[in-house]
Image (cartoon, rainbow, N blue to C red):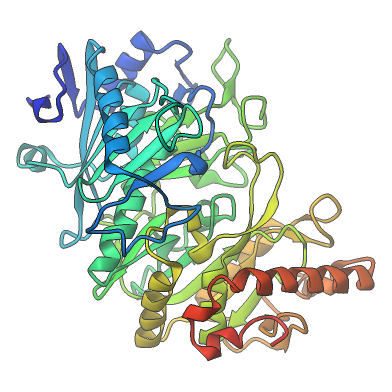
Length: 528
């Protein structure tokens, strides 16, 4: 345990526990946190309290002259002034100073040494420290001795509420980002995912300033050529599940960057949805939830500590966090060559989009900016069933710049490296949510395998009458009858109506962006 001084932040407590090992954090958690337990698999079971998902409506960004012309202000990036931020920061520091001991984690974000950022987490819960030890890139002892001042600091005082009377506050939760100070303050939520996404938000601002595309995606690489594949998608669309592919190297499951050298993972761990997890369906993830991993908000048998992954009585958003090297085929360091394939994962609650379609460059930009998917139950507070939504760049809640900034970077990368782009629907087939059924995971895996093998490069296609893209009509190991969605509906007329409705939603949503894109991209809209 190395010495550390937090007095420059105004923090002075009796005991600072710096970069403890997982074993030591287990001991701290069992000793100090009510309800914490160890699963029969060896993972630490912890609970996040009232908030079991992110609180995006409570995120705030400090408006500052240096960055205000860069930030995409609006419902994603709601502004607060510097004074309000200082009030919340002081409230957090005051709370941290009431604690007898604090936990400090120093680690890296970004596997490419040219772009990696030093991150410091200051928190009150061993569970939070273990979570971030797992999710960030863990420094060696030598790197820790030379760590120096961090680039980003997160003050996690989530057990203490924000003051609702403070200007700009809408609840007792506030997650505040200060881009200039490179700080983040958390009040009123103990959901660990807020820290993870706070780091991603910082990277989403600073990487594009350096011409690097930050991406909400998973990534794998061919074990022979080293060429990569990236899969975009919001939580619940299958990024983590589909990237756990024993036939390929795993680069990462959620957050990456695409630079002039190739791609690199931002994180050192994976954060998988655990609801209904089984060793048969997802063996790699299941075995990774062992000693050193965190199981969040799961239900377990108090007699034998066996976890019931089907029990959603606490939340649908049960999660497991584990170091990426717990996956046997993980490539360490987590870097790879430029992508051959770019896959957009969407969870279509209408049951309209095909299982797999090939996109032209213009269609790729249209669908990237649109970012259609569905919010999956439990991913955010208040979401109890899938809801159709549009999330630009398949990561709207985490963008800082206007979506056009990320789209321009992606377009340049696709053109330079000749990457193929595919739209894959992991949502509903045979009807909308409530009538149809979720796309079989085995079929989606077969589609992704066929993309990677090149089997779909010259596969037969037919133009989709509503959306215009090429629908793949033949894929190895996938029943042909499900590849064309209309064929799976018992009422063809109802399908046409649903397709027309969804196409209209696409066009309506894109009015927010069409003034900032080329005519060729606007022409890729459904029905154009």
